[in-house]
Amino acid sequence: MPLQYTKHQLQLASWLKDEKISFSLEKEFPPYFVDIYLGEFHLGIEINSRFHISKNRDKLREKYLLDTYNLFLIHIDIKEIDNKNKNILIQKIKDFIINDKNTEEDLRSKFIKEL
Image (cartoon, rainbow, N blue to C red):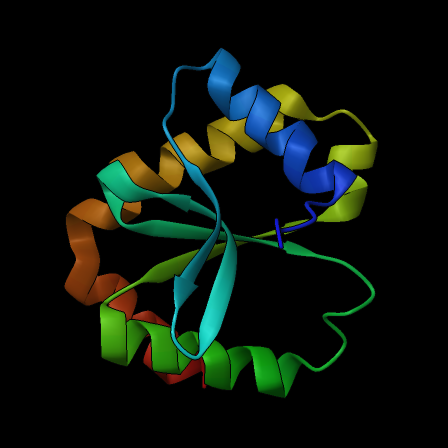
């Protein structure tokens, strides 16, 4: 059965496509999925909706993905997509790729401290 994508995933995917950033929708990292995966940068994007109500559970999931797959996540609120903040969101993603991925150990240390 084909996966059902949300309108927010499809909107962000469209913006990424406009920017010529390759991606996959609903990429599996067992036992989890990430909403959008940027394979070239090994970066996951999570679109936070009302289903992301447990920050503690999200942090544990992030730690698991980081420890098991060395996968970093960017969180984007659906309101940012609803408000059509394309340029801001694309810049947020590019900034992470350019700045934070270059200092992966610093980012890992910062992330672990936040847990």
